[in-house]
Image (tube, rainbow, N blue to C red; front, side, top):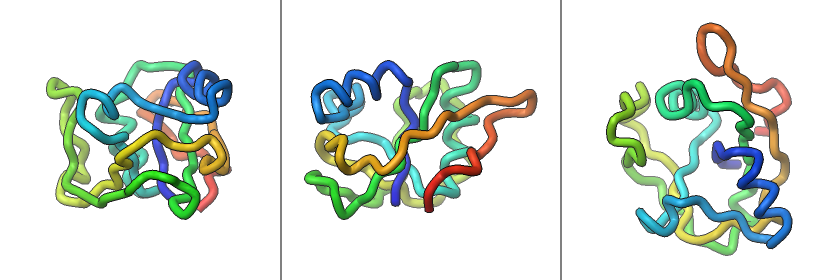
Length: 122
């Protein structure tokens, strides 16, 4: 299972078309994803103050696109890099089929940052 943080409106568009895409697919050639232990560092460094976020829980075996585990690349150069910069992150080289997403879970920010939703499948 890999995970991707997105806005609720982007997921709604994907459900209507059957494919999820992120702006990074066009600008960088891949969609940024995370392992479960990378979700919070990424969320807290890249998405602070944003609302209406979801974590897409993606079954890699159902993807029609190639997944490579690579060094992190930061789509927001002004953002502080996550503390997990020394780890490899899953990058999806193509759109994500809606059928590959097992669950979409709300991602809420508390007073001290984002909290990992208990209902995330592993």
